[in-house]
Image (cartoon, rainbow, N blue to C red; front, side, top):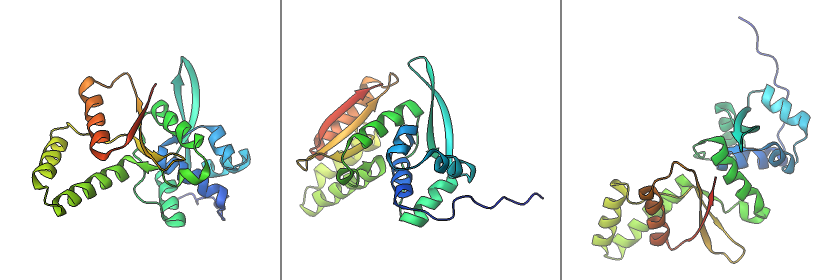
Length: 200
């Protein structure tokens, strides 16, 4: 059996943390996103060779583009090194890159506040518990039933703007039907978020 070559990256730095975190939270990122985290091309190559990152080709506006996502090893490294939990479930590259564009458009201080779909689901469940604690069992049950029937659906992400307002963010693909759009809007209303969408 061939021996695995020694890893080229043996030490991780804050710039690595920024890159791993971005992919952990958005699924796929572009080359310039990694560069903006402070990763040199040689570092990106070594992280690819060590099996932390994977390069993905996709079509955008009729052109072949490339982006990057974390491998299973990359997600494990992110969890071990920086205690990141419950990675965003990577979807289509063009969808996730639109999320990453939004993520990287935010100042560093606000990126920490970025919530993935899983985080939003947790917050929604907390809201149901709060409603029950307030004696609003009927309202909590109604929302639970709506969720079970697919009438409520989590947005791709929620971020805080400079004024501290929570904004639900959704990258809308051409596959979205009217019901799916309405289910996202229902969640936004229940959670009292503002709503921002981008069509891709």
